[in-house]
Length: 120
Image 1 (cartoon, one colour):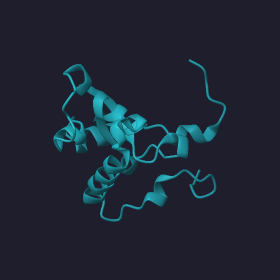
Image 2: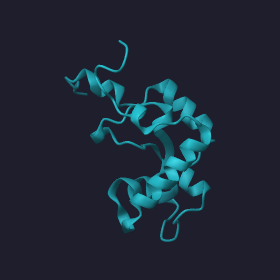
Image 3: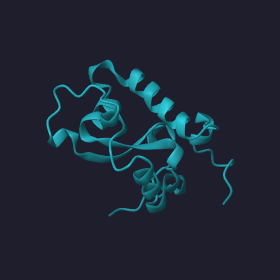
């Protein structure tokens, strides 16, 4: 496994403790499957859990914290990441509403890594 030379990238990955919190919070299920969102065309393999989806993606310096992630199956994670079927905007709105329902003081600005804003 190669080591990434950028220190900030560690802040973009979900650490084991954050992963555990998200898995518990989401009851081990894809948030979009739980909402019954756009499941036609998916097969059983596609609906198996794929991991944690970032609300603010790593490519936009989205931090690996529980307020920036939720469980997703392969089908919905792929749909969100790749904008399949033109549903990305709608899915992000649902994702944001889900996170806001859990974290009343949720603020998308706090989800983005900024080198000089975080304590070391």
